[in-house]
Length: 350
Ligand code: SF4
Ligand code: SF4
Image (tube, rainbow, N blue to C red):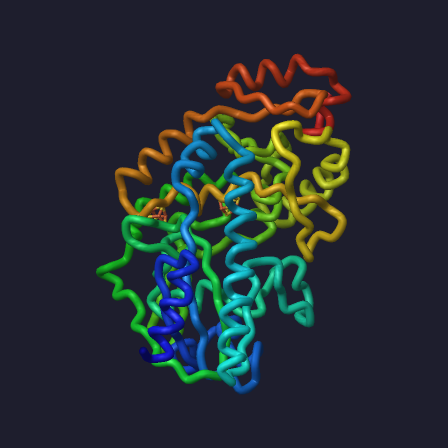
């Protein structure tokens, strides 16, 4: 068995659905694809994907269940951190210096403005695309045919010289450019029309231009959740506006951040985590819709869109319990709550 086959078996025995290899040449280009930032003598990077539980994703999208998905997301993150650690230890025992890249929350802190731009120490996405584990969708998320973007990527960097695997050719991409990922983003994080192009390992790629990470921090971070259409929400009870410009969003997020700690403790589940870029704030991942909706199959993705856009809106009661109503009822119910409570979730006009 070659070392590549051994690594593939090692990862698939632990639940990986696909494994690939990249090297300095196939990752040449973007600064966040530089494996020598992790180990100066690095020769290769190993990429693999773990799969989210799709039944749980559907219950999440249709607002039947929040805790299971939050749990599935944290479990998968912990699993990938553990698997990558096991693989890097195993390779180190064989004499190859190796380091895992933890799944998230791992930034180049020496870069000015890192809390805003969140530059990863090494982009899991670039390694996954260069090694053919997945390809870019319009959203910029990485996915696979018939699976879509409901995957979690893991990466290990090593001094072992591994034969690179081929990227997925454009004609085999899972992405049909349906752009439903842009429709479900309350924050308008992705452009519907404008593309960014870049070269990775000598190959040109493109995906939607991103309008500013602050948008996702504001919405996916859980501070607000009502879609600008008013027709559905994320799992956040926040009803703060999502203004047009990033500068206005920063201002509004500041206001939301001051009110966020006054929200009663959620009774549906006691979760959350602290992100390095926002110390002291318990972040609840309440969206992830751009990733969750896309199943790499147009019918399934369209069904997810239907379920989500008909799932209603979240309101939090004074006792911390979470209730879901159709949009107009949610609006009425929210209006009926005491002013002092409502003012925790929006900027009151009167
Ligand atoms: S939702 Fe549609 S456009 Fe967006 S990544 Fe998936 S297939 Fe591509
Ligand atoms: S996670 Fe939510 S807020 Fe963030 S980009 Fe995706 S859809 Fe938009």
